[in-house]
Length: 192
Ligand SMILES: Nc1ncnc2c1ncn2[C@@H]1O[C@H](COP(=O)(O)OP(=O)(O)O)[C@@H](O)[C@H]1O
Ligand SMILES: [Mg+2]
Image 1: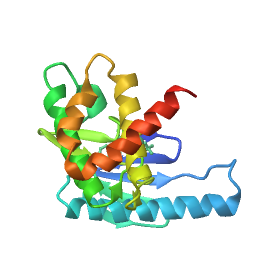
Image 2: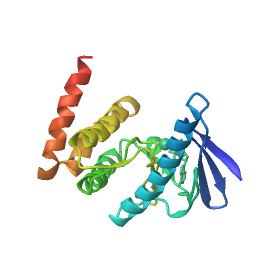
Image 3: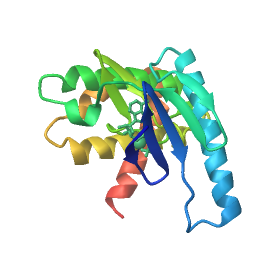
C-alpha cells in the first residue's frame, strides 16, 4: 500500500488497482465535530459517486464504504490540470461544461470543482473528490460551483480562455438563472 497524496482532509493510498481515501483527524477541530464531519463527508462522497454515475458521468467505481474511508477504483489517467494545452482546451472545457450541466440539472453540486479533481483517461473525464458535494436546487450553490471552477481556470490556466468554452457546454435556457447569480457573485467579489 502506497501513500500517493496527503491533502488537507484525507490521505490517499494506492492498493493494487484501488484507491483508499481515508479522512484524517484534524487536531484543531473539536473532537465531536471532527468525527461528525469526517463521517458525513465520507458518506456523502460515497452517495454522490453513485448518484453521479447514475446520470451518466464517469466517476471511479465505488467498492466499499467504512466510517472514515472509501475504497474506489484507481483511475490511471492524468489530472486535467496537467494535461490542458492549447490544442485540447477548447474541446476539453466544452465537455466539462456538458458534464457540469448534467450534474446541475440533476441538482448535484460537486462542491470543489477544480482541474485537480478531474482525471482524464482515454479521452474520458472522471470526476473525483465529492466530499463537499451537496444535493440541492439552490441557484447560489450551483453558482458557487461555477465560481470555484472559474477562479481555478483563471489562476491555473490563465493563457487559455477556458471559460468561454466551458459555457458552450454549460449554457442553456435552464442554466440562465444560475449564470445570472454567478455574474452577480463575480461582480461582488471584484469589489471586495
Ligand atoms: N480514484 C482515483 N484515481 C486516481 N487518482 C486518485 C483517485 N482519487 C484520488 N486520486 C488522487 O489523489 C488526489 C487527492 O484525492 P482527492 O479525492 O481529490 O482528495 P483531496 O480532498 O485531498 O483533494 C487527487 O488529486 C488524485 O491525484
Ligand atoms: Mg481533490
